[in-house]
View 1 (spheres, rainbow, N blue to C red):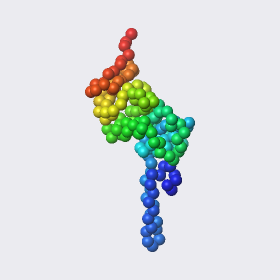
View 2: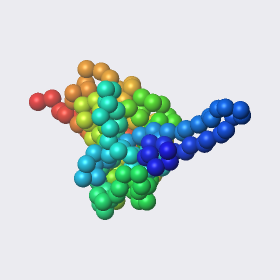
View 3: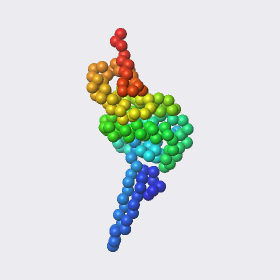
View 4: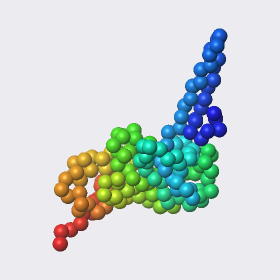
Length: 174
C-alpha cells in the first residue's frame, strides 16, 4: 500500500478473532506542475501521478522553477521554491477556500518576485516575496469590494509588492 503515491500512510490492525482493520491516509493534491508531463503535488511536495477522472481536478499550477524537470512520481521535491509556492497555496486555503480557488497559477519566476494569475480573467497579481497572509487578505478584500463590478474587464494588473498597499493598473477608456 505504501508504494502507491496517493497513500500517505497505512496502518493495519488485526481484530480478533477474524477481522483486519486497515486505516489509510491519502495524499491530497494541492497544485499541479509540469514535469515533462502534468503531475500533481501534495502539501509536502510529493509528486503524484496525473490521473484522468470523471471529475477534473481544478488545481493551481506552479511554474517558473528551474531544475525540477527530472523529478519522479512518488518522490518528494526538495526545493525551496516549491516549498514557498506550496506555502502560498496553503496560506490561501487557510484564509478561505475561495481565495485558494482564486489562484490559477503561481509563477515563481526563477527566484524573482512571485507572480500569481487569477482564475477570473487571468489578471496578473505581482505578489513579491514574504507576508503572504497579509497580502492575500488585502487582495481578497480589494477583489470583493472593487473588482466584482462592471469594471472587471478594465483591470489590467494588481501589485502587492509594497508594504501595506495595493497598486492597481486600470485600462484607460479611450
